[in-house]
Amino acid sequence: MEVESFRNKTEKPSMDHPHTTTSDAARVLRKRRKRRNICFGAIALLVFIVILIIILAFTVFKAKRPVTTVDSVSLSDLNFSVDLARFRVLLNATLDVDLSIKNPNKVGFKYRDSNAQLNYRGQQIGEAPIPAGKISADQTVPMNLTLTVMADRLIYNSRFFSDVTTGGVLPLYAVTRISGKVNVMNLFKIQVESSTTCDFTVFLSNSSVGDQNCKYKTKF
Image (cartoon, rainbow, N blue to C red; front, top):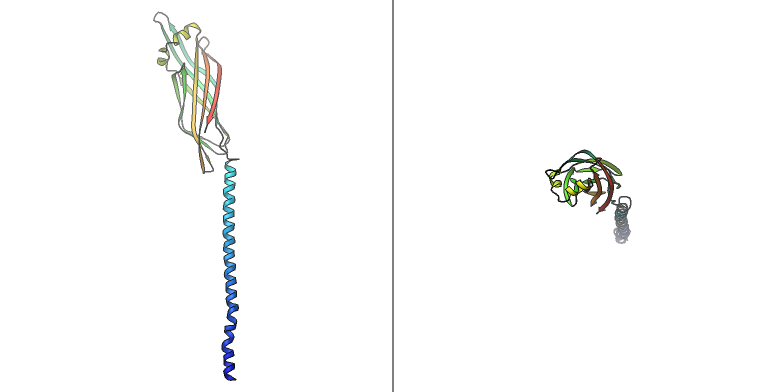
């Protein structure tokens, strides 16, 4: 009897062991499920953020074309004379060009050093630099450019003398190009170029500018 009692006492702990093993396994399983749920939640949140960024990038923050507009062209200085004896025309002229650059984007637009060119019948006769800068979101920046006519290039054009002597009218056109980039949410950098071409006429008789016609073009 004493032997059986001793066996019973020694065997009782072994009967409780399966319950302890099952409890530990359930605890480990719960921890694994918790980690898995946390991982799935983190992945779902990351996917949601990525989708939200893509939607915003192509809707609210979608890159739009900056617009360069020539507001006015005027003569600020004109000295003109014709020397018929020497078959020579003397001309000094300065043009003031007022333009504005509008950035319709929800982010800033940075543009590089650019320039404006003045042309007469396909020949460049003047130039003005446009220094690099930045235009904030939904902002319009006015600019004033001074174009000085390169008289030496102008007077050697074969058609210049006839334009001056017959009607006193000079057909000119100005070209302005602004190149830069739009940075969308620091993820997408989009190159943009905005150009403006304006045809106009300088009337030497009354030192005025007329018949202005501008065309605008922007490309990514």
